[in-house]
Image (cartoon, rainbow, N blue to C red; front, side):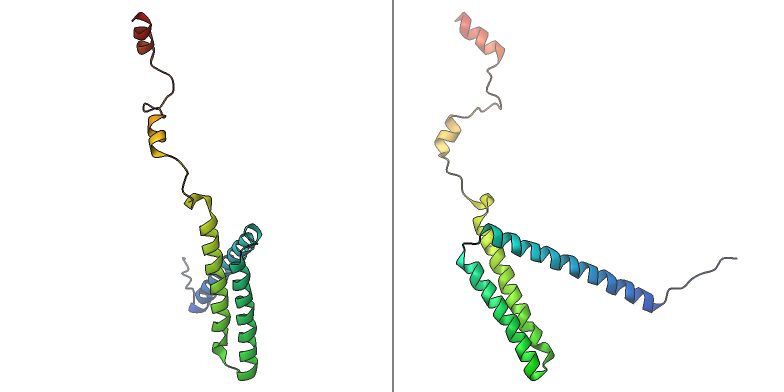
Length: 133
């Protein structure tokens, strides 16, 4: 009455391959968006343009090496260029974020001129005692 279906190894390998392709496509899109946002925000940093030039030269160099020698490992050179670009974008973004900037606050003034009890209003009892005195 009941039929047991067995899934072959071939279909599970195809599912794993499709999943890995989707994950790699998502990571690639997020990476490109991060690089573009970093260049739009901090376009005046010379280090970004230098790393972009290094990335382009490495990618062209990898293509030339592969064309001349038919060496399959030449893609590593392009990977190195892309890694240099990503690390430079990350460093420039972290260096210029507002979250890592130190506040310009004098500690003594901050402690002395702030409310210690969480509110600016004085309790009603204290105001009545001060008026009576």
